[in-house]
Image (cartoon, rainbow, N blue to C red):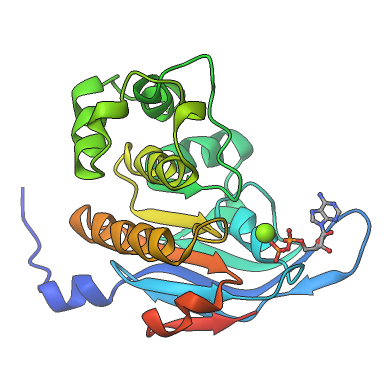
Length: 223
Ligand code: ADP
Ligand code: MG
């Protein structure tokens, strides 16, 4: 076997996400045309737009939950629009962690069981210990056995982050992670999200209308 040497600078500059000419139309309503952008491996960026500007739509396109009508979305050199739906589900489960605008936990399950759900759904080995380590990283280990509804809004957002991290995604997509939070919780959640993305070597893309985040990110695109 020959090992190819890749200098770390080259690896760092490799692109995790590249979007070109993306357009999308729901069965009814206007066509969305999104700006071109890219994000390097391990980078963190903000996609800013007002309510109704198509942020959630774009996030769902990036996650492969919607298919663009035009354009190309490459994640780690894979053109997601070319994958069949079963390949896409597998690709998403292996590579992408999503923090949805509304978290949707399963309330009949405990926090820890909600956290292992992505492992179960993507066919990975169920690893409660790993889920517990992530909970500890987010200082929520004492909430492992309670149902999610017993948590505060800020705690639920941290659980949503934990759930997005549990499969070691290369790419984390977060939809308005701070919009329901007061200033203190918003800045805590963003700090955690950025730190955790960095620790796990993941690229982080946040879509938001929250102007409080604007100055925290060097790299941002207006929708
Ligand atoms: P944002 O997240 O920026 O608030 P969205 O992406 O949720 O914006 O929505 C953008 C526009 O697309 C809105 O006008 C919304 O009503 C419309 N829209 C969202 N989802 C659907 C859908 N499933 N079918 C038709 N129109 C939709
Ligand atoms: Mg939205």
